[in-house]
Structure formats: structure tokens, C-alpha cells
Length: 442
Image (cartoon, helix red, strand yellow):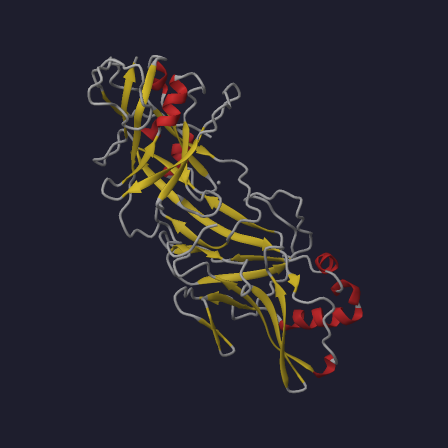
């Protein structure tokens, strides 16, 4: 998979292509009762041939507009330069909540701020996409509200104080370490990014809690006063093949903003929580040059004869199969296996994931009686995704749905930055896409 092998889970233009279908024709005749299902053909049946042995298909890469990114299970942070897909820059907006209402900080003249730290826990020891090169982080205070009743997309933005980066100068760069435990005081916790923020902001918060106590008397009042944070990286130019996006578990209790302070020689702390009650969303900026192969594939249909693409939050591969509509309506599909080879080497930093999701394309005239959604799995021995299309093919032949084609995309489409390069019919690679059908014509 891409990254979270040890972690539980929780963006248009077309290309033409031609797939070669292998049609396995069986000879038999029907019984009074026939089992329907994958390979459910009795050996003594006499079947009538369907008489079709090849189909003309098209493949394309379709831009996925308006992908929702609010309240995803993990937040994204980081940037990298993908030599195939272009640059990817991920950041997120989030609210903070009080760990306790109406905090009493006592005599602030005796308070010394030791540190003001934003902790962001990695979602696991393989929770990244790319490589582990250093990154530079920035944090800004929001000036506009995040609203629970708003819909946020990967391109959405919320106002923030662009002139005041809260990160302490000289501490912006972090070296990713997802394996080692992080030590907080003397306690070992799972690996996290520790970002040191301006201690003067911490003191302002403490002073405000005394001068405007009502702003700390309820969560809603606090959110009206302190609207949240925008957390991003500012890495500048990255050489192709460097950088990464990290997956952060901000729902865990260890992801929070903490004031560490000393008062009258006593060490104390106060937490501002990032939890499931907080409104948050991921922001993605993906850039490609006009000469980039992926962009050319989006712009020029003929490019898809060699390669076509899928990228989480951005691009879906589309496969259209008009030949299925030529099967007689009295056909029973027993098996329809689509094999889609990929251009991928095991261990490559830009992984493809173990699964893809397949979804029927809906047109304005398409019947919605069958909401066809399923998964395909990666077969390492065939270096291809294997997809069971029997339900789709049978629904088309039976006239239940229009033959509008399917989309293929990374399983965690709005929860990752996975991408896939598929071999097209004219690929220079040995493996070509194909569909194998077993059917009975009654």
C-alpha cells in the first residue's frame, strides 16, 4: 500500500484507448434451472455462443473537481516533487478547544513561559508518501471562523494572519522521524512533529483569560475569540523525487497545543486540544507544467493510448466499454474480470496501494437503479489491479443501467495522496489491459 500498512484507515478531459478483450466462449444448452454467479456453470450444460470476441474500449484521465476535504480521518502536511505527477503541497486548517473551561492561571507576574508547543502525532510509522527529507513548517492564526455547517474542499481557504508566522525563528525545519518515540518530559509517546511557537502568544492567551474571562467560559466563546490555526510547510524548490506528505492523527489526545510554564518554581501546563469536535479540513495544491505527461494526458485524448492516470483528490481513471452493449439481452454473465496493469516497481517511494475503488459513471440520462461501487485488488504476481466487473456487465446487458463506463481511483481517494500510472493499450511495457468474460447466451 502507500503508507499506512500498520495503521487503520479512516483531486476533464478524456483519452482514447483500446483494450483487448479475451472472450471465453463455452458451448452448451440451458437447463430449466440455472445458477447465476461467478463460474457457476454446470459441466454438462450445452451453451450457445455469444459470437463476440473483441471489444473496443476507451480510457481517459478525468479531473475530479470539488473534492470535499473536511473532517477527514487524517490531516495532511508536507510537500514533494513527484517526477511524474508534478508538485504536491498539503496543509490543513483546524480549530482548537480548551482542555478545561475558565482556566485559573493565578498571578501572571510570577509566570515564566517555558515553551509553547504544537504537537502533531504521525498516523503510524509508515504514515507518509514520498521520502523523509527535511521540511520547513509555518503556523498562522486564523482571522475567519471555521464552521461546522460549511462544506470545505481541497481548494478552500480561510482567512489567516499572513504576516505573523507563529513558529519560533530558527526552529522551522524538522527532520521527519516516524519510527522513534518522542519524549515529552520523561514520557515516551508515539512519534510526532513538535513545533515551537512564539511564547508571547501563550502569554497573550493567559492574560486574555483574565481580562476577558467570558471568552474562556465556553468552547463556543473561545472559538469566537481564537478561531484556530493554519499549518503548512514552506519548502521552496524541491528536486524531483524529494519531499513527502505526512499523515497526521489529529484526533488523538497527543495532538494538541500546550503551554509549558513555571509559576513560583512549580512546573505547570495547559492544553488546547485538537480533537474530533474541532472543525478542520485539508488543503491541497497540485501543480504541473503544460509539458507534464499527466497534464498532456488530461489535455489530449490520444495520449491515453500509452498511459492513463489516477491521483487521489485530483484525477480518476475512466474506462468505457461500449462493446458490452453488443451482447444479446438474453446473455448471462458468469465472469467479467478486468485486469489493469500498472507501471510500478515494488518498493518505489510513490506506492500504488493495495486496492482501487471502482465506481459507475453517472450521466444525465443514466439510470440510477444500480449504484455500482466495488473494489479491485492489486495482484503482485501480475503487477496489475484485478477488478470483478460481473455485476456491472450484467446490469448493462440486462438494460438496468446505461453503459456509461467506470471510474478507477485510489481506494482512499479523499484520505491520501496516492497516485497510479496505468499501462495503456499501446504501452511500451509488456503487460496490456484486458477483460476476460465467461457468459451463457440463452
